[in-house]
Length: 278
Length: 278
Image (cartoon, rainbow over all chains, first blue to last red; front, top):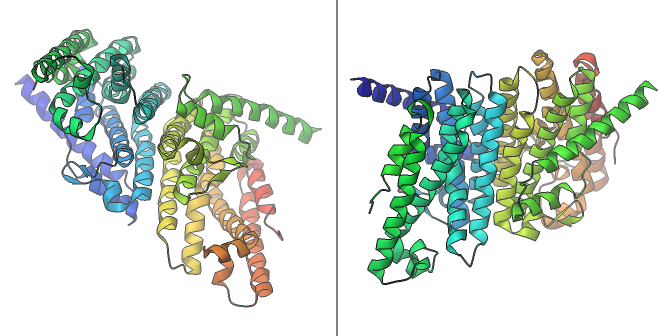
């Protein structure tokens, strides 16, 4: 019953998060409003929004602060998707046309810009005395993602080490951010580095798992894939990659378990997806 | 002597602002760091940084808050330049290659993204109890600029009214922002709308003045120019446009004079440039 009520509470707050994200679109009729609406209503599993709500609940944060952190991290992630799709020329997102494909490249740049700014506006809805720290930390993680994205766009010759570093930088900071901001808001900044390490491990496990699934497709396109960094037959490299992803996911689970008051439960569940996956 | 010491104080703080902006570039060697450095060290008159310092001084804000607001608004403006140059395919900025031209389109998107995020990190260096409001207001103005930029990129058939609205939205919010944030920090949010109106008038006066200078060039390119919305001979439309810009600039001066404790002095000096200009 306790788990059920927690789950219901999470769903209720998730509805507030959806409302807050939509409320941050421009009021007036405009391409930016349409493009933002198109993107936000295309679905998406709201992994980062849920991670924030789970950690906020565990740490006893207020409803207002929980929704603010959850919305901020989810919008920021969606900003990164808008600009990623443009830069990678990916035409489909969540089964619908990507924003740049439907509304043009200029609109995709502008809508992504709006989302970055809106993520800080969402965060500022926190009623928390540590807003300075929250903003500074969100920027720190954003910077890392941007540097990682650019490194990925430029990379040509990957070593396994370079692959890992880019996978960590591209995805880790926005996965850890929801939990890290909750830790800051709850006065537990001492646990940030543990959350960061856990999110880096999940980022690698996620990317390797994704690569196993996209293996044949990537080979056709000549795109980078983790399995192409390994030596052996097709079955051998798949087996190696699976073991690798599982090990990183298990490490993430150990780290998540160290976070205070069960605030790493969401990261643990996420990591679990990549243990013996595929 | 009082004016001299005020001017010296402003120059001293402006040096801190330059330091803060550079300190917000990534520490590690990366294209983003190079591109950001290339852009920030290309000069620029730092109009918005100075507007903030002037208003902050008039309103008695602390050095730390003055530098934070000044840096935030200047970086945000530079973010808009990075993405504008990309969208307008302008190859030169401040006598140097534009970032997209030198470092590529992807790097320009990423560096502009970093600058947007960094502007909030700079603002969060304020020691001010109204940080929530400051962040919310900076986002509000950012949204307006983004919607204005997109409207400008899409516009084909301009009326004078449409021209004015776009000129106001594109430039006004980032000109008024430095002063508006200082008013909020000083507990004078009641004067925000006056500062906004003044900045809208300056935005129009600036754009019209700019158009008079670029008149022949724009006619060759078939680009929109205010003078092409007027009826008459070349000399007649120039004279009309000058009168128009002067009237808007004078209106801005009257509004700036209403701001508390002389905090509109910077806006007044800026507006003065467009009175009987060209």
